Structure formats: structure tokens, C-alpha cells
Image (tube, rainbow, N blue to C red; front, side, top):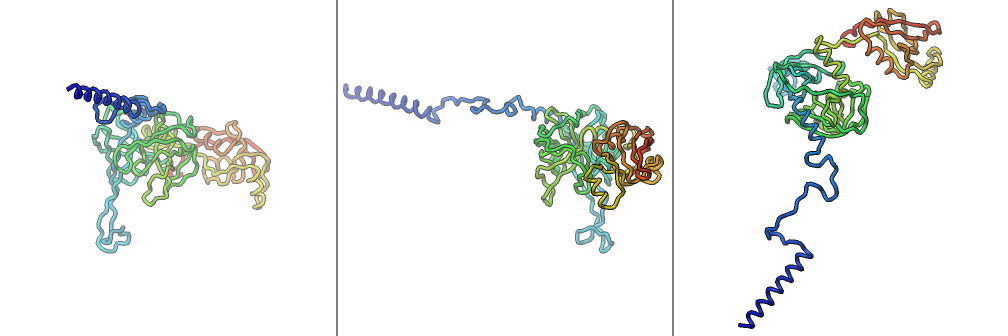
Length: 386
């Protein structure tokens, strides 16, 4: 009996020693029922953007999502041949094909006004809108502006969560942005990226011509058109409108473009008030002139130009305000409204910022007389299609 008790004591002591050694070197064995330690903070120190409750991207997305709508469109019927392609020539028995599309829009006024792209609603017979709360409404097209690829539509609803626009001129390359829209018709989708470039000029993306566009690597896909590009505070800094893609289906490769919010707001305000955009116009085509351009023109046999930089007029529209004021091709605009011509954008800004019927003062070097003179041009409303 004493031997048995001795064996038991030795066994217990041995088990305790083994358990202590295992716990010291290997921790608590799995499956023992001991609690698992957990912390919200990574051992490596996660950046604040990823911490629970301190994610500005999530906060910005939550702010923007309710102001972004899904848009469904029905296009005009197109006759189809029995072989399944458009029946342009009347061969066979036409089978009507009705184009349908999905896109996005941004609520700009709480009484139902929504901003989207012109190419979304152009040539449509029916436009409908789905809000964040899944309610659907038929939409009326208030006005379109093909020049900026923007349009305003309206639904019969009140108290909608209108988006807040911010100053797109303050954007810097590298700023965080989020894109919100109806990507590929899947419904509201949020992607994140940065501003890759600003003021992209003379872009022609599948027939859509863009000026001063914002470039971003936030994923933009089919269906994002007309949706929001927002800053990290959830304010609108652009309207998504186009992508550059190497894929046949037009998938994102990280090069997307948005219309700056300052342009979008200006266009939207005019459409809401007038049903169209009224632009001041003088009727000239021009290019920047500097030493290299001057030398090139001289080699081409053009007349000698003055040793001053400015905007070289290449074309004057007959009957335009510029024509009536006496401006001619090869004249050089040296300053406009007292501002020296830093680049051709100086001329565009002064004309755009004026009002229809206002006077624009220019100092011009006239090619015919080889002398400088003052010219006053009274702006007119830009004709359609200009």
C-alpha cells in the first residue's frame, strides 16, 4: 500500500513538472478551454486609417453613398436583321433591338435634381432612378450639355440627401479619393485611390471630349458614369465620366477621368435655372505663341511675328464678335483685360468668366499693320455646337 501511495505521489509530481515545462516553452495547449487573448491593435501598429471606428474612407463613403443614385435607361429601338446585327439597309425582316443601360448620378438638390453624364441620357426614351432606399422613380431630362458631357435629370421626390460639392481647384496629385457608382450595373460600389493628375487637356475617350479632367486610379468601370468622385471628407470633387482601357469590354486599368466639381456645379446651376448652358463667346481659334512656334512659322513662310509672347489667332469665325471687332488671323493677343498672356488658358478663363454682352479689352498686335492697338470685343452667346 505504501508503495502504491509513493507511485501516485511520484506520478503527480512528474505530471506537474511536465505541465510547467510545456506551458513555459509552448504556451497553453490548444483545446484546453483557456481564453484566447485578442486586441484591436496590430502588434506592428496598424495605420490609423484601418483602426475600427477611425476609418475616414468608411466615413466618407457613408456620407456619399446616399447621395449617389443608380440610373437605368432605355434607348431608341434599332432594327435588327435576322442574323442579329443592325439592319441598316432594310434586308430581311427587322427585329427591334432596344438598347438598355445602367449608370449613376449624384443628387444635387433635395427636391429631386440629379446630375449625371450627357452620354448616359442622350438618345433615350426612358430614364429611371433608384435611390439608396431602393425606391424607384421615373426621371425627366431637364437639360443636357454635350460640351462638358453633363446633364441634369429630375425625379418627383422631396427631402433627398443632396451631396456637398467642394473646390476642385484645390486638388493635389496624391490626394485620397473615393469613386462611388453603379459599377457594371451591380449596384452602389465604392472604390478607393488617389488623384493621379489634374487638368488633363484635350482628351478624347470613345468620342467623349474632356477638358481639365481629373485623372484617378480609383477603379472606375462601366456603370460608374455620372457617379461621384469624392474627397476623403465625403465631398464631391468630380463627376466620373470616362476610362482609358486596353480591354475589349472596357474594364478598369487604373486610368479613370472625372469632370472637376467646379465645372460640374457651374453647368448644373445653369441647367437648373435655364434648361441649358449659356456661354460667352467671341469666335476665335488660337494657339500659344513662343520663340519655338515663332521660328516654326517663319520657316513655313508666315509673316514675321512680334518678339512678344501671347495668343496667336489662327481663325476668326465670320460674323462673330471678334470679326466685328476687327480681329484677323495671325493677329496676336498680348494681354486681355489687363492680364498678360501666360498661356492660352488665360484667354479661355477671361472669356469664360465674363458674361454674355460684356466687354473684353485686349491689346493686340495686328499682322496687317505690324502695330499694336487696343481692341474691345463684346461677347455673345455661344451658338449651339461650338
